[in-house]
Structures are given as C-alpha cells and as structure tokens.
Amino acid sequence: MLQSQLFTKTSKDTHADSDSINADLLTRAGFISKTMAGVYSFLPLGYRVIRKIEQIVREEMDGIGGQEILMSALAPKAVWEKTGRWKTMDVLFKVPAAGDQEYALNPTHEEIVAPIARTFLRSYRDLPFACYQIQTKFRNELRAKSGVLRGREFIMKDLYSFHQDIADLDRYYAIAQGAYDRIFARLGLENRTFLTYASGGTFSQYSHEYQVVLPQGEDQIFVSIEAEKQGKRIAVNKEIFEEGKTVCPVTGGKEFRAEKASEAGNIFKLGTKFSEPFELQFADEAGKLCTPVMGCYGIGISRLMGIVAEACADEAGLRWPEAIAPYRVHILSLARSRDEESWKLAHDLAKRLPESLLDDRIDLGAGARFADSDLIGIPRRIVISPKSLTAGGVEVKDRMTGAVNIVALDALV
Image (cartoon, rainbow, N blue to C red; front, side, top):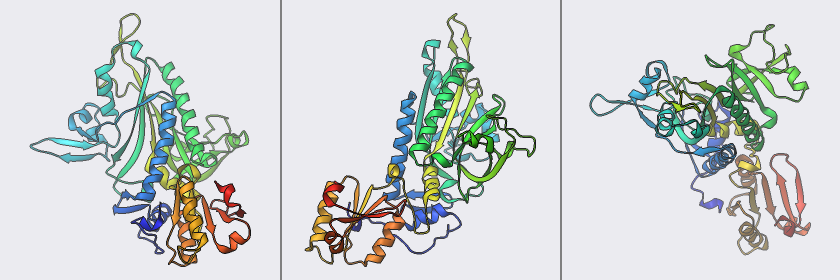
C-alpha cells in the first residue's frame, strides 16, 4: 500500500476528545472519525485493526465449538416485553415505526437468540451447542465517554451456549474462560488483564469480567495480591468489594491493591432467565420436557482497539502489537527522487514483504515522515537511505521497544 494513496491524513493537533487517550491518538493518526458523541466511523487503518481483532476472536470461538451467525440489529417490542426488559433496560434505544409499532436497536441479543434456538431445539441430543456473532450494537448511554471505550454504537462479539444441565454449563464455562485467556494473550494484553469477579445475579454467586489495567480506565478493580504471588491475575470489582471483609475467591487472601481498569469482556451463567420466557424445551432421555440453561460470553471488538491503543501508546503515538497492527512493516526511503537507488530498493521491498505500507511521499521532510510513522505505530519501520546502504543494509526500528539495528536487505525478506 502506498501511503500517498491513503485518503486519510495524520494531524498534529489534539482533538476535542483529548480527555480520552484512545480517541485523541486514533483520530490524529487517521484510524477513526467522530460522527457524534459516542459514535465513530472506522477508517482504512482502523478498520484493518478491527478486522484483525475480529479474526483472533473468531478463531478462538470456532475453537470451542462456536457456530458463527449474524442476528438482526432491530427487534420488535414484543420480544423485549416478554423478558420484561422493555421497561427495565435504561440503555435500550426505542425506535418508533409505522402506525403504533415500536422497535428496539439491540444492545444485546438474548431476546433474539432464544427464539431462534426454540425453532430448532427438540431433544437432549441437540445439546449442548453454542452460537456467536460479531455485530454492531447500540446503547442509549446518558453520557458517552472514553472515546471508543464506551460509546452509543460499538462492535461486539457475543456467544450464547445452551446446555442440558448446570453441570454441562459449568464445563463449557471453564472452556470459554480458556479461550478468553488466549484472546488477551494474542492481543498482547496478557499481563494487564485480570479475571475480575463480579456479582452473579440470581443464578450464580459470581459472573466474570475481563478488566485491563489502564492509567485512565473508567473502572476500579481490586487486585488480589496473594493471587499475584501465585502467578494468577485475579481481581474483584468495585461493586462487590468491601475493605477488610472481602476475600479473594481463588486464594482466600485478604490483601488487595486498587487499580484503574477498563472492561473488555464479560461472561455470565444465565441459567433459565431467557429460556423460560421463550418456552425453550427439550425432551430428556426419559421423554420428559425440560428447560435448557444458558451461558453468555461477550467481548468488545471496537472497545479492544481503544484499550490496546491506550495500553501500548507512548508519548510519540500508537504502538500496535504485530498481531493486530494495520500493517506489519512501514517502509521509508530517504531518496529525493524516484531515480535514486534507495527509492527503487524501497519500492521493490514493499512488493516482496507482505502487509507493508510504503511511505512514497518523497517531497515531505524526513522529520515529518518519521513523526507520522511513530504516530501510526506500525511494529517495524524500515528506513532505506544512502547512509544505511553504505553501512551494509537498512535501518530497522522496533516501534514497541525503540531498538534500532542495521539489517542486510536480503535478511529482511
């Protein structure tokens, strides 16, 4: 990809969302564009990051037997009334339609997936199964904040599992936790992510949040010090923490450290909360009609982009982990014309290296191009210049560590 062909441009100016690190950096680097408060469009560089995050999540959901579907974003009022959430869910966008009809823009999809399951579920032989989607969702937030971390429109993965009994739900729940651990490790967030215990509601003692420690995180969690000593990343969320009385659910320890964090995912044992209102039933081995129990497993795709942006950034700009970077390599030639050897080598290298962005703006000063490269945050920057060629190769900078080395041209490919 030639950088001159990107219709987006970088900016040196701090934007209106400067109170949010992710929105400021992603906007200045040309990854997102603000439509209105809490609503963003994803531009070429940003959408490449989104698709790579989606692919990591998709691979892990497929790996635990999830079947990908795409559910409707719009739902009739009746299904939300059936569960009682039409009146109780404050963030539900309610859309007037023709006549006296009303619809909802779905912030979550239990009211959609349960009727789908009812269509096909007949016997215990049909269980267990799990289906998931990656889709745009909507929340009527009173005050959108924190850039793409808490918006009114966002991209999310939600998986729903259906089981014959609680024991099988518990089994799958543990498998899903393992998949989530792998997702955060692949995103480069392993050491920042804490399995955070939250209230489980009426069905189970706990639900679980995946909280990523961030200096400007909008949540507060309490990290178990005893768990850390054992090499485990366990925390308790603010709503269930009582100083001096709370014990770590895993180790029993009573020492905690407060941290600011941002929630990237959550998982719940739903029990029959949604299967009962929609009259989901299956015949067990004896032919008796039973109600399946459900689990719900969510993860914020667009939210993760913002979390990684904040977690990895430095004073110069973004620093993307290689797994989700928009491009793997950023190539710059310091040639002053396209007739020079360093330009020809850069052009040839860009053709040979997969997922490379070639800065072909040779009329722009080197300092401005280096600043753009740091702001965009591609993992490796390759600079080809007469000086580096004289030294026996090209200059390669690791954006994450800042390390610079001279590498032979052939060794790169």
